[in-house]
Length: 453
Image (cartoon, rainbow, N blue to C red; front, side):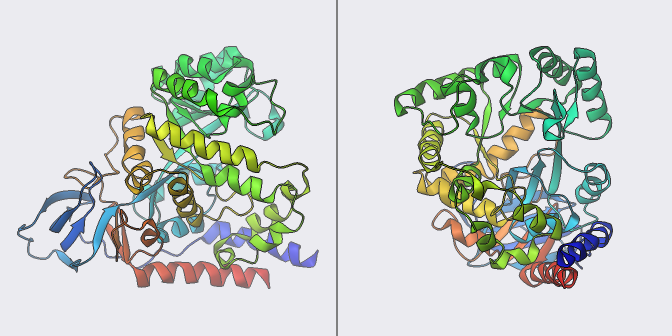
């Protein structure tokens, strides 16, 4: 107990100070010389290119570009330059979490609810202005019809509209609809979201009677692949919790989502990690023994230990396998997928690491490496562009795009694992090499180690 108390007391210190800003180079102009560029506009590689970055944007790409005097030159000959990765379903809570994301090559994050006011405001702004080492952060305000899950509660259409107004005033990019909203409140959220530029994304809303009704009302993103199980393959109130839908029903789900043009979060790692620990006593301790725990906050370590998935009964593994087949069918059917993880709220889902595990699971499900990389790059950019057309584009390497880049030793289209250990990462035009990224991680690990003593 004393150990946990010391851990908890350390949270105040960590929340106040977070990751120290790294001494990254913030020159207005940076040139990558001789890179093999994976632009992700389509499946191709542009070899021997110079990529010029000016003021946080990609200014030009070409094999014989003249590099302006005073620009920082990065020798990328024989190396591979691809867009930064995006995790569009995360729950980071600290500046340290954001720094860890960056060290794993993640340059865009969508916080999907339960952010503190300080994170949603001060930390998000600092990240997006480049004042701290972090990805670009978007936030969603989770709204529900009851306090059961700890979200903002609305019980009338008037309150729902007020919630959207508050979300917009506080910089939230999305409303995340949650399970217990009334149908009237969901409709009001969707209508106000369209009017005010804060679109609705999220979970199954039981009162809507099915996922298709939510999409027809204006929801533009399904927050988990498993939501199809909860509210499409089975009626929202008829899911036993472990029954597996028939594969013969998958084409209908693909057709339904395509009719509405919605995006789907392909988060295989989320459900597979829950299934892995379901009913297996003691498995959480094995997660807490992994090397990545060095960068897991004391708060999350305490929460993981008490999550309780290992105390459940039955097996979710057949459902996890079904979801892999569903996601493959969605991808083959042309449904726009984005990557997400739910990290670090679920035991075993480490910030940054879990996104790379998700990419590996998508490849194992039968998607091509190009499809997988598109899910974590260009599709994320396309989703944000649809929701917020005035946002700076990202997700491809093209003139005018936000300069979010990963430099690797191998071609990610040959081996996605090369993205796990980038030579360096550029976020919003700020370059950090491997030594700087490792220094960030060490600072976090040392602080957490001190807090646990």
